[in-house]
Image (cartoon, rainbow, N blue to C red; front, side):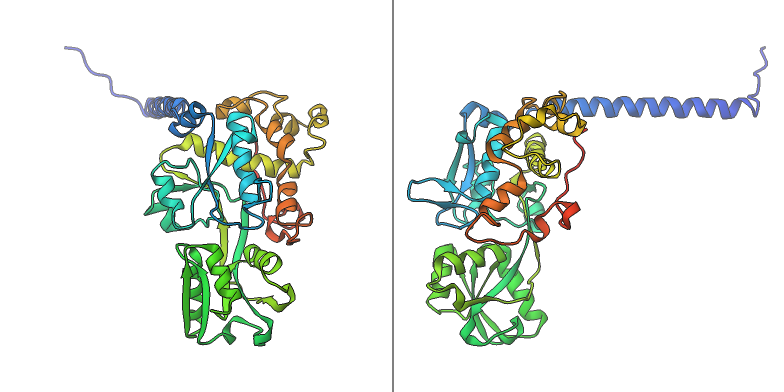
Length: 360
C-alpha cells in the first residue's frame, strides 16, 4: 500500500495561490464573455430607427420658447429640438432625419411606452418614480435647472411665503405639481392648485389672472414673460427655489445600447465645448495633435466602433449643430431672445457642472 504524502506547509500557500489564480481567470473569462455578449446585443430601438430611416422624437403641441417652438415657415427650433437632431445625426447622419411627433406632457410617457416615439426629449425631469415604477431609463442630464414662482409685480410679493392662500397655475403630469405642494406644505401655507394639460392654457390662465402665480422651470417662466406677456416688466420671478430639476432624455428600459448612444452624443457636445471645438472650426480641429480631440472627431478610430456608429459621428454632430455651449446660447442664452445665464450649464472649469467622461 502506498503511503499518502501529507502536503507540507510550504506547499499549501502555493496551492492556495494557484486556486485563487484559477478562480480569477474563470471570473475574468465569464466577464469577457458577458461584455462581448452585451456589446453584440442588438438595439431594437436603433434597428427600428435605421429601418425606418427616421428618428421619432417627442414634439410639442404648443410653442415652448427656448425648447420647442415653430416659426412662420414651419421650422421648429429649441434646446430639445437640437438634442433630438444631434441624436438623428449620430445614428442616421443628418438632422433632417429627425421627426417631431406632437405629444402633450401628459401623453409623452404613454407614447414612449407604446413605441409611438423612440425617445422623449421634452423638458422632462429625472426622478425615482419615473425611473422605477414607469420603467424608463434616463440619459445623462442635458440641462440643470429648477422650478420657481412668477407673479405680477403689482401684488407686491417679494418671496414665495407671501403667497399664503394663493391660487397657483402649473402643468399637470409634471414634477411641478409635487414641487409646489412640497413648498407650501414645508412653509405651512395654504394654496389652491390649478393644473393644466396644455402649456398654453396654463400660461393664458395666469395672464388672465385666474391665478395669482405660476410655477414652472426658470427658463419657461422667462419665456412666458418675454414672449406671451403684454409687458414683461409687469412680472417678476421670485428668488425662491422650489427644488433642483435635472432634465434628461428618456428611453425605454432594456435597450442599453440605445441609451449608450444617447449618453455619448450628449457627452460629445459637452466635450467639444471643453476642448474649444465649434461648428466653425471643427474641420480645422481635425489636425489638432491633442489625442482627446482626435478621438472625439474620429481621426483616431475606435470611439465610433464601440458605439456601433460611424467614426465621424461626433464630427458630424458638431459640424451641423455646434457644441453644447453654442446650442445653449442660441436657444436660451446670450444669442437668444431669453438671454438666460447658463448658471450650472457651463463647463466645470467655468463654474458649472457640465462634465464629460473620458472617450478612451
